[in-house]
Structures are given as structure tokens and as C-alpha cells.
Image 1 (cartoon, rainbow, N blue to C red):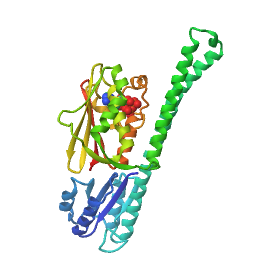
Image 2 (image 1 turned 90 degrees about the vertical axis):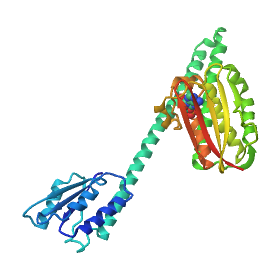
Image 3 (image 1 turned 135 degrees about the vertical axis):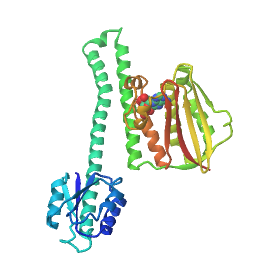
Image 4 (image 1 turned 120 degrees about the vertical axis):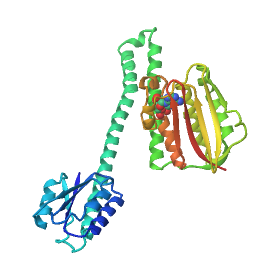
Length: 350
Ligand code: ADP
């Protein structure tokens, strides 16, 4: 929807000035143009137009030997919008171009436009999500079905493959379970169904616990976990401990999945006023800059096949973001392709 606001000029520049100022201050961010038409007997608004022409989309026309009604028609002819809003001083309230009624109509139209834009965005997001979801579910489901079907068709008696096929279908079903668990977690976090249980704990101790729980996975790639030098003391925070274990686990797991053989992952803590900044830094494959803005979206992956090979669902970072948002905290990422990544999040200090 594109509006044309038509202002035939029969009156004082200060009123036009007032109108343009209020348009400039308006919170409306959509597209509209302003068409100002003088009847030709004066060029009273030149200065006002010059003042606003950098910040508002104004077209300014002079006409000669024409009456006020003509200016209005002329403006409508020049206007490019789908809708016209006409500030006609002589037909509404004399001496006030910006009548209350017109203002209300403009506000209403603007409000509706924003609402429609928002609904369109949500609809697009929902459609994308459903497409992604069905794709993610289909892959392991069809794979398991394929192996089971082959077993039923006779492979069950083939001692060379029967166990392998069963194991493969089991793996696909395990993948489905992880996916459904992650989706369940996200939907609960989104609906606010999950309550946070706040307590005071040490982030240093928590990180070491996560190191231990991921020891075997890290050893497979010989990735070394450590606390940053100078950060050995306790760093007390107030948060939901179980949920923060999940945040650190997801970030550390990613540092293994997208890490290089013999790599290193370091966790650092920085006190920043009331907050503690926690940073997880790896020297892995890194992420190209153009992927960074979408990284925390559901199912967004830089390299789909690598993520799947590593058992990723594409939901880990989205869960992390949701947990931190529920804590009213934030997460950010810095990364250089082929050099490594740093994920940093904040928590309330105690
Ligand atoms: P996944 O289950 O695919 O790992 P995530 O939501 O945890 O899903 O991460 C989304 C994507 O971000 C991953 O597929 C990967 O491409 C990228 N990514 C996440 N963490 C890292 C990291 N530490 N190094 C490089 N890439 C990463």
C-alpha cells in the first residue's frame, strides 16, 4: 500500500510547516509521498518545502492561472499512490489543513498497514517453518522405513546385513527422537510454559561439569577444553542452573561438531557491571559473515550435510537463544571463516 498525501496550497506556510513536521515526527515507517501544489499566484511554500525535502518524499508543483479546486485535481493527477489523503483546507476545517478526522484516518490506515505487514511476515515464517519441519522429519523417517522394509523383504535372513540394517534404522529413530525433543523444548520455551527456577551458582564450576559430560565426544576429535587463563576464580550468577547447563552444553557441543581435529575450546568470564559475560571460543571451521545474522533461527545451518552428519538438528542455537531471552539476557556471535568462532552471552551476577 502506497499513500499520496496531497496538499493544495491556499494558505499559510506555517500550517504546511506544522503538517510536515508532524509527518516527520510520526512513527510510521512505511512508504508515502507528499504532493504539494501551489495555485500559481504565490510561491509561499518554497522555503518550507526546501526545509523538509531531504527528510520527506515531497513533490512540489507550481501552477498558474488556476483556482484552488484545480490545484487539488492537479495534485491527484500527479500522485502515484494507491490511496490519496487530501488536506483540503476549504472543504474541512478552515485554517487547519491537518484536521482531526484526516489525522485519525491516516493513523488508522497506517496502523492497518503495519498490522498487515506483520501478519504477512508471520505467515511467511510459519510456511517456512512447516516446510523445514516436514523435511527434517521425513529424512530419518524414510531412512528407517527403507531399512525395515528391506529387512521384511528378506534381508532379515541375511546374516551379513540384518544387524547393520537394524542398527541403522535405530539410529534414524534416535535422530527423530532428538528432533522431537528439541521441538518440544522450543515450543515450551516459546509459549512460556517452561518456568525458570532461579538459584545462585558458580559458572566456573558449571562449565567444568559440562567439560566432563562431553569428555568422550571431545576425545574423538582430540579437542581440548579449558577455562581461560586468569578466570580461575568462582563467578557467581543468578539464573536457572539446569537451563544454563543446556546453553553451555549446546555451545560446547557445537565447538566439537564444527571444530578441527586437535582443536581447543576455551571458556572465559568477564564481569561487566551487574552482568557476567560468558564467552565460548573455538578454533574450528568458523562461519562466513553472511550467515551470522540468521544463525539463531530454527533449522538454519551453514552446511546442512555436515550438521546432519554430526547429528545436528539445526535447533541447538535457537534453543540457546530462547533460554537466554527467557532470562532477559542476550547472545551474540563473532566468527571468522576457517579461524574460529566466539559465542558470548550474559547472565545476572550475584
Ligand atoms: P546444529 O544442530 O546444526 O548444530 P545449531 O542451531 O546448534 O544447529 O547451529 C546452527 C548452525 O550454526 C550449524 O549447523 C553450524 O553451521 C553453525 N555453527 C554453530 N556453532 C558453530 C561453531 N562453533 N563453529 C562453526 N559453525 C557453527
